Image (cartoon, rainbow, N blue to C red; front, side, top):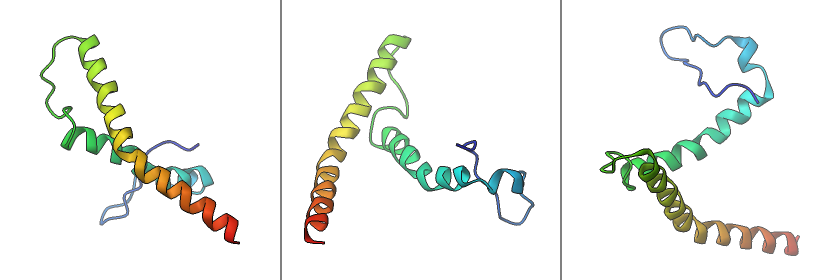
Length: 93
């Protein structure tokens, strides 16, 4: 997969040239980047990771894992429903 860096197509010229953006892995990285960013955004806005009130690497590590598990539990009903509709659409086709 191509490096996880976004291309800047605004007013100035992008520092990423065509050698990077031409690969199919770069397009895959762009299409999947929101999955990663969405999770970290949730952890910072809704979860307790914007300003950690714990001391020590072990406690912060535990908080991160616990927050990720909470995020996955929130996503789980949507993922199950999505999988169920995909199975139904395959059976009807």
